[in-house]
Amino acid sequence: MNRLTRLMTPALRHPFWIGPVLILAVWWLAAAGQWISPKLLPTPASTLQALSGSIADGSILADFGGTLKRTLGAFALAAALGVPVGIALGSDTRIYRSLEFAIDFFRSTPATAMFPLFLLIFGIGEESKVGVAAFSAWLVIVFNVAYGVMNARPTRILAARVMGASRGRIFRDVMFFESLPQTCVGLRLGVSYALVVIIVAEMFIGSANGMGRRIIDAQQVFDLKQMYASIIATGCLGYGLNILFLGLERHFVKWAGR
Image 1: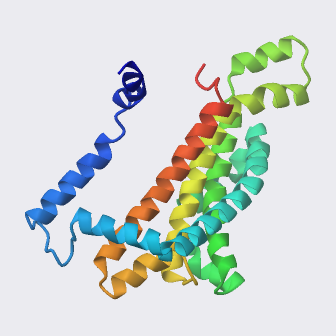
Image 2: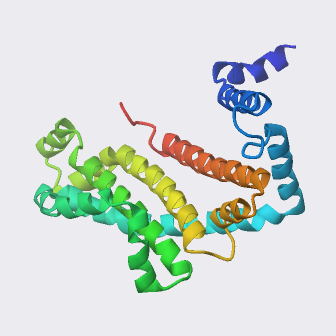
């Protein structure tokens, strides 16, 4: 009994299940009470049954894997280019201020508005989808990394200077680690942006597989159970990536906020 209590204690302290249960309850009430036409809103049970069936027969796995592969590819490209550029911009306020308008302009431009440009450059293929997703993620990563470097605590930088540390040593041992919490925020936002853009690109640019293609195909043939099931799977993918990056942040940046 004591062992069972110990196992249940974390779940009681962190009742993460309340949100999903609440969503399912509202969904069930809306479907049972016919707040929305049954033709437009299937029941949670039938939707989850369609999702489990797609997992069992493997039909959803190729689409799920395709979206995940494109998202991680776009994110890896954005992080590889965004982190060093953000560090370079943040280490010199004058450079950042001179380029601030361009960064904020493109960051404020919806990524979907860039689809025609990337289609012209890369054509209809994987490169255009990954490219526009990487560009969207790159902008948010650059902004957050630069912001983190520029807002390193002045007292720690001053203390390092007083102790005779060189400019390179201050940057490597003080500013870099001070910027890591904000860098992690940028990376977490970047992977979310990449996923959103990939899903939209799969819907409207087209692809051989992917959750976006699966959702739009189900909508076009009015298979709403499969459409909602695919949306749930996509949401689980985004939530899982967010939890993964939060875990990595807590593991590698334990000093954040201290």
